[in-house]
Length: 324
Image 1: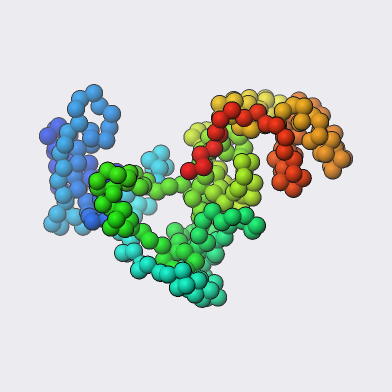
Image 2: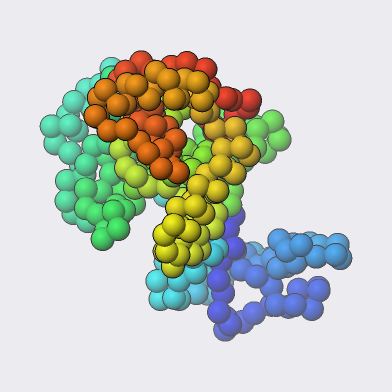
């Protein structure tokens, strides 16, 4: 369930706390899309005990177009006219056997489905030569100016995705044996349309989310350069207004802090300035110099770790990435 904006409705309720009630929409499989009133203090941190006021919105009021969902993140508020009322997805498609999936996949690869924009969808696969992390799926082939899919079309290679939990899963959720999935907001996805991976981002400027189509412990094989973490916008804005050499110095300070806090694996200095340094000079013909020569060698090591089989001892004490 997600809080929705409700702008001075024709008829609003006052809960037992004496405050105007909030409006939400249910995302429970059995009551999906149904709107209701609830005390706003239930979801706010208040010193007093939360109020248990609750009432379904029935009658003509349930069709009020102002009952709409917030966007994915509460910080990304948009003008009212950009909101869209949430409509429950259709029921789950019938289960398919492996033979039926293979037959349907071959057919759909030859004749891709149309996305909501009316164009053939694009097939997204895992990296070649690597164990598949996800089922190949179709998504919108058109992109916005900043690289995101133009519409939210998503279907498995063999057919539509299951949007609802099975009856067995619902019983586990209701009995408390398993937690309800995604009750607050959808999981982050990168520009590829793939579920993002949580951990230290490739720029090493923060801990957040990055392209989910990657493998290994060093962000190898990413199909896009998307990354996001708390405070990223403000940090990039601040760095953009900073001149050199203070900008590079600040970035290096942040990287060292993140590496120390999350135990990002880095080769020992003996290996870094020994074999890796020699390999880099031999291959590139350039000897790194200056304050950030070490960063240049680390970057080379990560880019060539798989190709050159560069291994060795790394300073690593814990887990810096959530494999989730």
